[in-house]
Length: 187
Image (tube, rainbow, N blue to C red; front, side, top):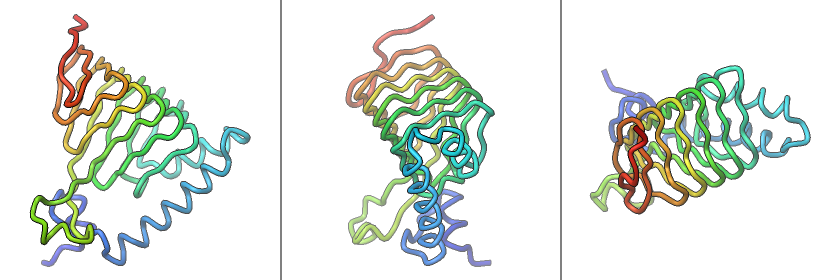
C-alpha cells in the first residue's frame, strides 16, 4: 500500500512538503493562527479557547501569548499549566510533546522538521523529514532558545536564554550555549 505524504510526515519518513493535502492543512492552521494573533490579549478567554481547539491536546490551564506560529497545530501536545510568552514558533511536522508546568520564554523556537543533507532532495525546500521533540515536566526554556528536531529533554530542565539545543538531555540540569551543554546539575 502506498503511503500518503501526510502518513510519511507523521511516521518520520521523507515527505513532499508541497503535497496538496498538506498545503491545505497548513492553510487551515494559518487561518486559525492569524485569528488567534488578531485576538491578542484583548480577548484572553477566546484566544486561549482557540489554542485549545488548535492543539492536539492541552491541560486546562494553558496560556499562549500572541504572536504565535505553527505549521499544523494538531501535532502540539501540552500538559497542565503551560505558558508560552510572546513570539513563539513551533514547527510541528512531527509531534511536539510538552509536559506539565512548562514555561517558554519569548521568541522560543521548537522545530520538529528537518530537511535532507542531499542538495537534490533539498532543492526548493520540497522534501522534509519529521523528528519529534519532547520536553518533560517542569521545563523552563529561556527567551530566544531554539530546540532542534529530535531533541528530548527530561524533567526539571532549564534551558538558558539563547541556547541552541541540538541533542537530548536528561533530568535536573541547566543547559546553555551553542550547541547547548550542561552548565549545572540541579540535584
